[in-house]
Image 1: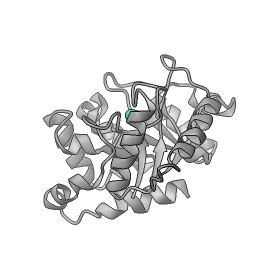
Image 2: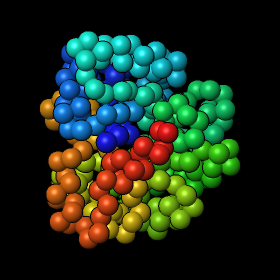
Image 3: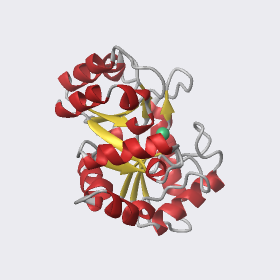
Image 4: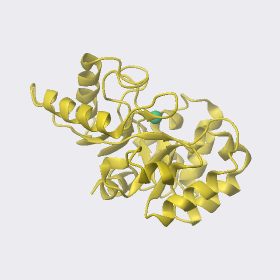
Length: 234
Ligand SMILES: [Fe+2]
């Protein structure tokens, strides 16, 4: 499986605080059957990282995972704050795409508020050949109050990423309900951990498989955790 969204790099954002935790997270991910994880530290005005910092931290962490050997490959990425000028920032090399492949951008869906610029922002990215992936929309006011906007964005080719924790109900009943609905209606494309540590939000994907297969008729779990994310990093 491929985990497309996790905060596994040590000491770079509000995710893993240190190398010990990062290694523990990597062990958990590998034991869960995840062979590749995209490290997606927050990249925002509050956490202004440079793409180069993330690339370097990824190389270092992969080296650490060689000994003792943990079968997990980390690819560079970022969870980018939603802002009207994302296309411009990307052109100026201030953002990092998923797996640094210049094709997909993981964007944090604002928890509160319905940004007027969202549709235009996605459109401008698509014009320069970037597919926006909205991270955990099920936790947003947008999905609660304006599901039609999300639907429109999906129709236009944006991808939606759901959190495992939301399916488990750890982000509240409403997020769980919205996650299931987005999966049921075929609007969600990716299931990821959004892991921040080894205990409370660990990098595991398989633990919701049975639950989703029970809740969502005809769900293709493998497609959500492997098929689509693997094609994105390819
Ligand atoms: Fe995240």
